[in-house]
Length: 286
Length: 277
Image 1 (cartoon, each protein chain N blue to C red):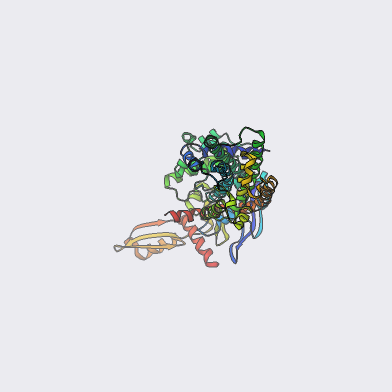
Image 2 (cartoon, helix red, strand yellow):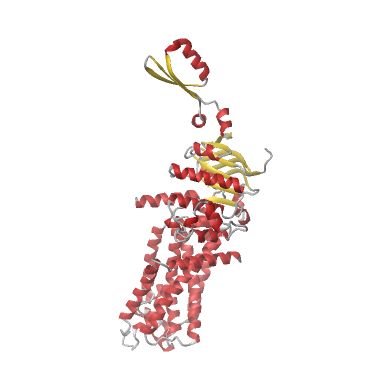
């Protein structure tokens, strides 16, 4: 892969007092890529992304975002980075269109507010006050605000926390659409594996302050042999067993019991199992 | 220059929001109540001097409303740090500076609007205001300008140090205490000497004095301390507050803004929701 590197993190460390939250995090993101940082709660995802956003000062290691150290990124650097914040009730009295037009005025080549509002599906709400929007509509506005300056790189921290499945699906389509049409590099964090699998070109798994895996969804599933699940009925009783080699296990099963084996089902290891076993393994070695 | 324009745009948009729809009622509440109070004791006499209180109180009240800009700034800063407005500004290029500038524009606009609400009907209620001369408007202008800078920069510095909107509520108590000894509603000469000294440390007394000197005939200066309008001292004290505020505020504000992050806003939110739920 010879594509330009947009984020380069090398041996990133973060300590709060005596607690080490990040213990040598290393990964890269390339231009145009959607990168998901996946990990259980408390893994250090938010800390990592806030260091990359320039909101937090790291304890050690090297970080390069769009060719600059975020801790010293100036206003010109800031204009190239979009951040989707989880809004709560800020700018509640502003009208949707008014807020986007105002925030756009800080950037050299902003989106046309009306066009952007349509792109995130808020066209009929442009004249409404922000505080009257529903939760899902507010998050669309958050994305629009993150995008308003046509950033080269967009950060999303746990973007769909608290969404119902329908809102989540719509949100995923919105993000994928923007990444495709604008070619924006996107880095998001999530603890939801299905979300990472759906959105990301590449996944890095953060656990216990370290990157424990890095690759595409299928690479990850392949690299770490998960355990398949075999289920069968014998003499009216249901059995379930996990095994690394389902083929051999099933052959042995038939050799022993022959036709007495009924209702056989083999469920190959999913990325979810892989993720869980990875996290478990990483926690054991700590 | 662009930052100034954006800050101005921000300030004017929020000023319009502050005076539209249901907001208007709460904006008008205090100025109107104050006018009612002035109306009822406008004809009472101060210590058999023949001077009626209405004329003394109205300019003092104008000074007080300028000083209340400080409370407004503290409230804005603490509320908008908690609700994530400040973090949004931080995520935007040149956003923090435009944000603060906008806040000063909004607050100053509110203060000037209060003054108009008080002065226009007040001028018909109270006799003896000197509204026709250019010199009164000149004095009013410099006292107002210096007062806005002094109280709001001090407010911004304080607001950065106060941890939450609840704590900001507590800060209004000492402010009210200072106002009550500052000779707004009754001449400060009626107070014991040590309280007069306390009052003269804070801007409220000087703002009131400056407004009286602008709007009242010179003969009325006899009611004041040292029987003088003390313009030089007014300029000195308000100027000192302004300089201290302008030096201190950017330092503490920058420190405050640097600490904000998504995780912090999420934590504020959690805390606030727990309190409600």
